[in-house]
Image (cartoon, rainbow, N blue to C red; front, side, top):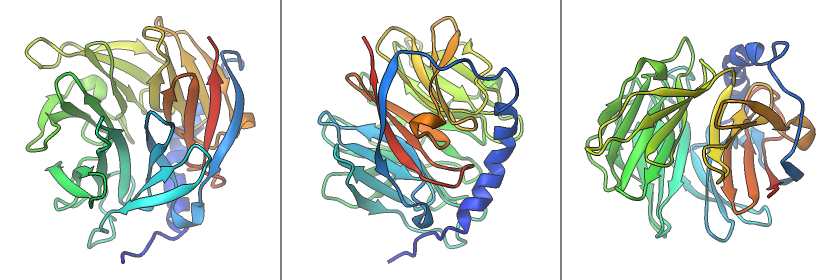
Length: 323
């Protein structure tokens, strides 16, 4: 059985992310806390010593959450009551993952759930034998279905149910990859300069929304919209929001293009309007510890925090989205 990561990996990762946090905490970078989120509470605590730094989340119709633990190389199931069960552990690379771009440890990142319960997720190790898109069928074992470049860092993942296409945001190569849900050879769908890093991580969170791929860029603090053309190719990039330093994952609220964004460095969730205006709706007082991912089920908002910088209490916060 592969050994789990010790807590010694956590400070190293925190030092890397701290460089991003320094600018995120600059004066004037955060607006006052405001509606429409309330009744925030911590629904589950995770074990930092076991590498349970939650990175991404996929929800079932009944409210169960599937979570990637970035440093533990694991997929976990979190019940609506907060009980956590490990459903898969990925193989450790032969070199321990020291060549994983930007991080130096194996990263289990984006995850989505198909309608039949199949999970698709990303794994970056800096090695060609493991880096790529993985699948976990109900009752089965994890299986890689598509290889991605070993010098890349696949991070955000989304499924377009209309075309049965998976899209992957690569934070190191500044690329959005696409591939059929069955797997195979990925296509570099977009390599627009707006996706590139300025020194740490570029393209990060990713969602398919209203005929377009939406991507965040952590280094640039932006939200980008890339139309999916009729022939399936990428259209021209449009920047929809700026000034969101430390932005990681995000989720649409169901009100047009309005979205909630996880701001890792300052431990905040921002409500971003279609015109780019933003306000802070959750912060550390609500239990956030460097949030990495957001998902919605009805009026319930799920926010994962990894504790990358605070080095304490990685958790799952639930809040209510007002009408």
